[in-house]
Length: 142
Image 1: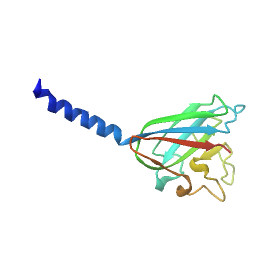
Image 2: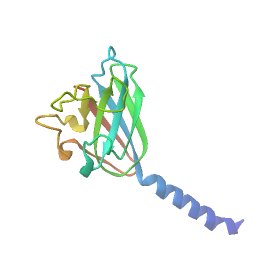
Image 3: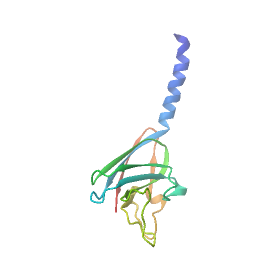
Image 4: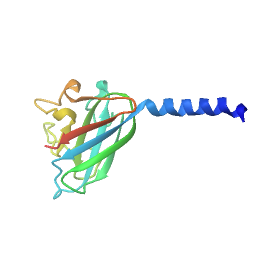
């Protein structure tokens, strides 16, 4: 029986180490327009790609079901991210914009970062995912 102690201990250590390198992120989204339907799309961006749609580190979509929705991301690698959420009304997986580039679908960012004369800066939207922790983020669509 003793010959199995070391391999089992090493396996447990590797599993614990892999798990602890990530965190959990819960995004609470408000301002969802139920009348317009569609999908809610959330994306996590690194500093160099924020908020370039299509260049996100990872993300997910969820069918619109209420005015306030929750998206949960498990096993998010620890690090700094800017989060963008938009209501993809036409379900084309792309943020619709008008002729001058202003978004026409409801959009929001982590930390309440706002669009002024262009997208918010990464530092305004930055959130930090800690190893083994749950991060709660609120985003209001505008």
